[in-house]
Length: 276
Ligand SMILES: [Zn+2]
Ligand SMILES: [Zn+2]
Image (cartoon, rainbow, N blue to C red; front, side):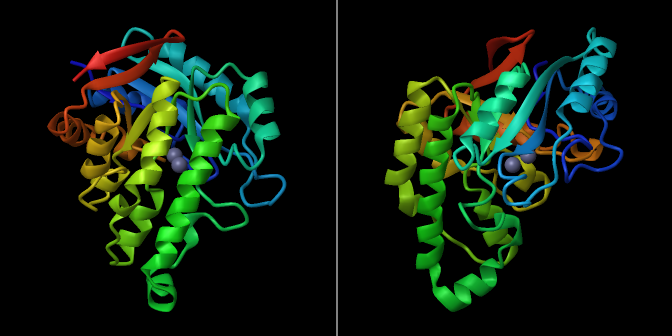
């Protein structure tokens, strides 16, 4: 039975666990009945200019993934992918990476707004107390604008990752924010990706971490469908073998409830749509 995990990190990501090798992720995937796995290590385009992130060793990652592809070929469809962060801020870096490596699957992300720290480091509680929810709204609109720029910056991009990434950190600080207030803005992004056959990712890390919603959540997924969106990718955003495949079924169930059934995977370099 079809089961995928299309957003995972090895130790070649700056925040990957030391035991997160391509081999250990594949082993965990096979044990948990995953049929399709994509390894999508981080490449943050601003790593050099802003010293915000350590470098990514693309060649070593490639060698490990290719060895795992061969070893697990009878049990698992393994896809060689990448998660490109902030392609809009340093498009030359993104294009050079894509020109030098034959990634089968490309995720586009925004982890930090221009000139700002990764949302991971924001103190959303303090922001709420000091500056009001209007500030969150302002940042969210900037975030969507930057995601639109990411899509425009990349000739090859297969999915847009963890839309509402800041939702996780808002929730962590105990603040509720209704991102649906910005549905007009999100519609623009959806129309842009739909017109280019780019998928929307459902990131289930917030499900296995116990937040109770995926990124994006059910209401936003409904909005995507209303805009004509169909194509979805699903990933755990695991940074170690421990959570490979976790909560993917729950993610599928959320998608079924809003009528989204087309899951994009890439097999031997070719796109396929699996119905759930
Ligand atoms: Zn990410
Ligand atoms: Zn990731």
